[in-house]
Length: 241
Image (cartoon, rainbow, N blue to C red; front, side, top):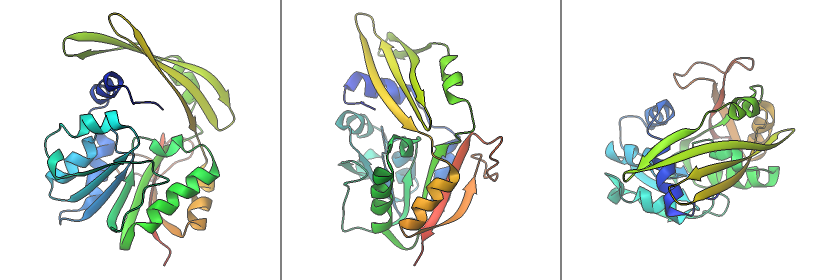
């Protein structure tokens, strides 16, 4: 996905307010202050919610425009914002909780990329720390659902923006689509491809990366994953050592 244009980053922020997934990840952080790494933090909604609770937060995202939006939010001044891909991020710090949310895991299109991201998590995990992320259940008809999605209207500084999504290809585990943002005088387009791996394949790659899955949820209320009905596959893992 390409969110380098400031207008798209601001529209994304409006279109994605705090939701039950953020509440779930905040609950994992606990009541006592801890160190949290948010990989693919986007416009920083989750980072700032964690910082508000007194946690020491680092937010990492490859898009400078997304981080610019994040830095303007309440409590953003206490967050360490880093422009980097998940695969290449490196720090001397170790974290009690490492998150990858907003279905960011699905932009990792190859096993090489997934293993690199998992290596980043494993390398930066403190003793006893946890990793958590989600991916959409491939058993659902996402392409059909997105094709039927009606246009969505957002308002940015008094201007109406019409967002439409067009599925352009479906091939096995992969769905490609374009998102069009129609402003008053022009239309901006992002092009995306997402991967929808199975629970079993993700767990296999996690084992190869030195991680052990502790929980697999299917709903943000903490209900267990049901392959036939759950929309999400939510993993919580720890180091194998």
